[in-house]
Image 1 (tube, rainbow, N blue to C red):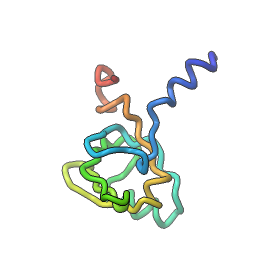
Image 2: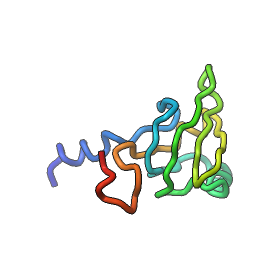
Image 3: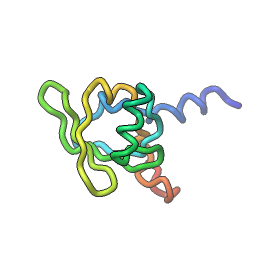
Length: 98
């Protein structure tokens, strides 16, 4: 494989603590503790879910997300382990890649 193409594949993977209001993408990684992962998954944050950042508090904590038509808030320390792919807005539609 070509390393340069591999690197660019990950260029659009962004940790949630680095996003801005209005950003959206497909959830690709949940990398926090086991209990936290279970709680986040029960709220709809599962790999492949479309995640939109609704609001980020002034000091960056919490972050309000829209997932599956409803809004959830995550703490900044939880958001560090969550990555979204901002180059794809719909995992089922290949034409949605930016």
